[in-house]
Image (tube, rainbow, N blue to C red):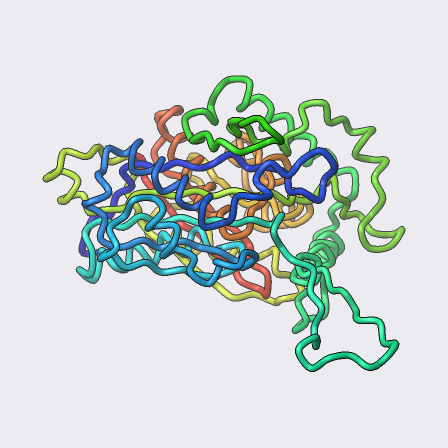
Length: 399
């Protein structure tokens, strides 16, 4: 790279359990763009960067669920107080969108298009509609229109014919990963996530969002998919999602949640000039394609590629944040790369926190930067598999 790109701050909303889970859905009436605006405002406040300094906004969003979804990053930026003269871009690389937004922002800085970019991701899965296709052309007398669950159907890759959970089953078979191993890893995720909440680590990341609950207003500031009382016995009682011989369950898969995250990117020279404190240097990234039927293995070539581009051996990486789309998927990546689990997702992962598709990548990077600072460690890698058969990774160095 010809410029030293740095992250000077970031913030996220809580990851709120989606409305399909009884008793939850705190963000059901807060659209993705509004969640994104909360994250952008928080990122600017915590980085000390004024909104007037921002020259571009890039936000990832995978499932466009609200009526204003097509306006995406543009509306998120305007609602966050960014000037109307500042352009905005919405990107969609599915589960890798949050990391892709950072890469796209880095491209802009490298090319001289912008000095300061806010990049992140946002997702409201609660607002995924039920759809009646063909309604515009009408229905025959007596015909019953079919209602499609847009969220559920979006988790099917029609190219390879597998639901995302089935691609995890494919990996479990290929890499000989047992149901017990998946449940044990899921338990670890909840335990690590619960400990991060108890210790207050996530308070460093989260900006509260006030929502209406009946006649009251409630501050949402906790990741409520994390279940501190999770047990192996409870996990073992859950039915497999696809057939009695399967091993992927709702308990060892990522949670469906709503949320947003954003980070502020600039050059080291600009940060020095303005007096902004760099938190991490962006050293490299990589994106790769893999077999769609084994999409969860995507982080393997991407992590290897990011390490190679940065000239940093994998064993020199101090911490990894790897999206836990499914426990089986993560365990396949771990086995393929020979990862030390003690370095990975030390504050819990998506099995516990949940996976708001377009926002997860940015959340991974934000959590990683904070972990590197807490541990006074040097290198970190954030990575995610991507539906359709891709992987993405970004390598950062603590400033």
